[in-house]
Length: 408
View 1 (cartoon, rainbow, N blue to C red):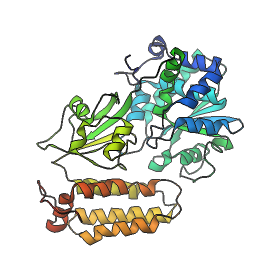
View 2 (cartoon, rainbow, N blue to C red):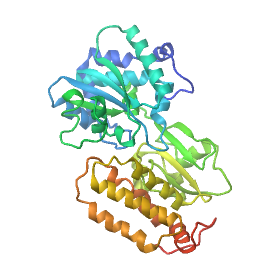
View 3 (cartoon, rainbow, N blue to C red):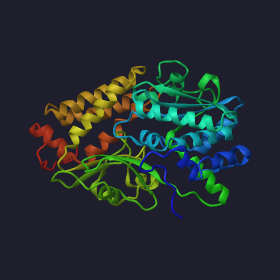
View 4 (tube, helix red, strand yellow):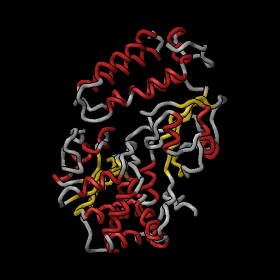
């Protein structure tokens, strides 16, 4: 069976969406909420914003709490290299709305909040229009729907930060417990779920109605040394990174493939030999990295890993929200160290001290996971490409073909 696609080549209107069985899964979920709940409680679907927490566990936790409840469709996408959620909202807003309403029906939620970056003006306008179309088609019944712009800040997409912003707060992580599933928007148990995750629910329920397994696809954002960067829909059962690179027009420049970073800036680098890996969560983990939000960065031998690492650490140092001293100290230390190495003013000893920083902050309290994010890319880059680091440390810059170096 051919997989149902989430991302059409151009914006899908309401009439086109309805012609493709749009909103039929929602009708079923509302007519038989128990069946909808059963489908959500048994799904293997995980959070596709990057954390991959099982959706079924969130739903179960929500159902353990008394109502009233709420649902947040989280599309606050401010991660470098990721554009899948905004592409989905631009091209197929009704599948996001239907998926969010299915979750609300299963949870008997009284409100659905659509939460997306305040800078995504086109998507905000498009979603506002789609919500109006839905309201005109079904003027009464169902949960209240509203759209809340998210602050232009990376951590604003974290679940507790989203709850804070929606409730009029600073939009920074508040830590847990309580989890949003216990106390979220307006003090209600709240399902905070990624935009792409919720968009999968209509086809999941249609498959459940037919008594078959759903045929999943995933949205991946390709960037880096690639001819046609952008958002691509892939079949994780068969598509590999190598096939995706070919589909995107191949590599740019005169270099050959050097590395892949499959899950966004916090994921471990993989060597070029991993290009044959299927774009499937288990396969990516088996290869030694994390799937994250499938923001795939392609790196050729024309690019310097040290300079890329300096860019990554600069991002995390800039985007930490300042609430947790250990996070502030670690991210700023990583940034300073990589800037020094990149500019030819560093040393192996300086690089080694990052391990001391890791040990120092390992047991300190934190309100979110950002403190851990610089570690996987930097440690993997150093392990895989010591020559790049050696060139900067020993010669002041990265030569076109770095001199091989022994990993320290």
